[in-house]
Image 1 (cartoon, rainbow over the protein chains, first blue to last red):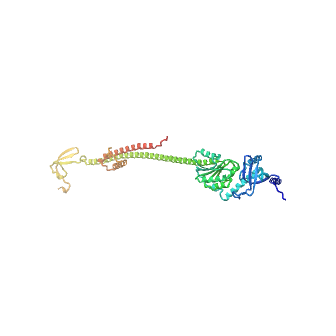
Image 2 (cartoon, rainbow over the protein chains, first blue to last red):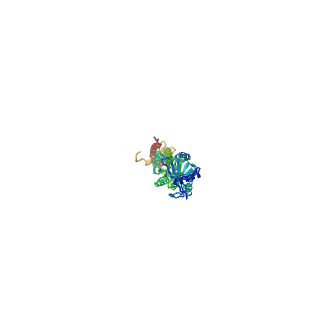
Image 3 (cartoon, chains in turn purple, cyan):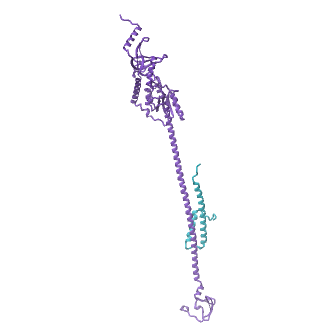
Length: 420
Length: 72
């Protein structure tokens, strides 16, 4: 007859076989598919094979229960913190060490965890990040948001982050301190934990639809697990396909997340994003100020030039007027001289004419003839012009230059036959 | 010179003066007009000098007004 096992007996036997076969600790790798942290301080998690092809909601083919007792927790946490991971969380790919046992009270195999390979987790995260990046690159999404043009004056900002968080406070304070009138559309969303990536992606779409100039995705510092949500494909696609440029400021880490790689521009911190926005607006304002100064200087220069030209024209006008007046004075002087000459000439001319007339008159003066020896004979008061005007015995009167002569004609002798 | 004998303009005065002077410079001087011509010419000359002096003063004033003002 076959042996009939008691439940406890069977469990204890299987446990002994298990321990004998797995006498040393084993390393198991998988994905954390459930995590429980009760008040006892122990940690209970379920490990499954990592299968990206597994549809959401579909049950895994195999599960390993893992317990991390509080006595081992400190060592494990130290390993995680040295790697910058912080602590394990849902969905994380891990390689853990422990001893296998059958827990009789629940009749299941479980791994009593004693250690963790943090490098494996980091490698898995990096590998996952690279996978997402490669996928986006192959679809041309890696640079799509980066190709969008950022407005010169991004004054309306869409903010995606957790309301009340330090990141939100830092970002908004930097904008307010600038004194510039920014308008911020804030869509509150969780930025870590299970399902956070869907919230962030949705928030990006909401603010992008609010006609903002720039979408800003920020979150404060945290460990790798906290920031791991920003390596997700969901957020990366939301950023890559966003119609508005996305600026990111995620954590304080040097390593960039996938979201940083896909965003138009990535900054180290939320404050750095705000400072860059303020700087951009101030640069435009300064450009406008400089352009205004150049315009004013050019206008002043033109005015000065025109004033100078006017001054030169005024000088020209004054000199020309003065020269014209001087010329006119000289001309009048000339006319005056002409007048004097002309008057004298006219005087001389008239005098000369008069003199000529006078000399002609003088020439015609009978006294002159008398002086030259001519005599005027008169008989009976009439001038004797002909021999026949008198006869012998007539009394005649002769006028000479110096007086009168009385004489008697003794005889006459005409010189031509006409005289008969 | 009263308004009735005053020339309409400086240019007219100069033209009339020139006409008189040309007459005086001719040889066949009309003696009856000689005194009147010389008197008229002298009158026109005086009138022109007056106009010129006034124009000089006015222009100097205008030019002085064109000097740039100092802005406070």
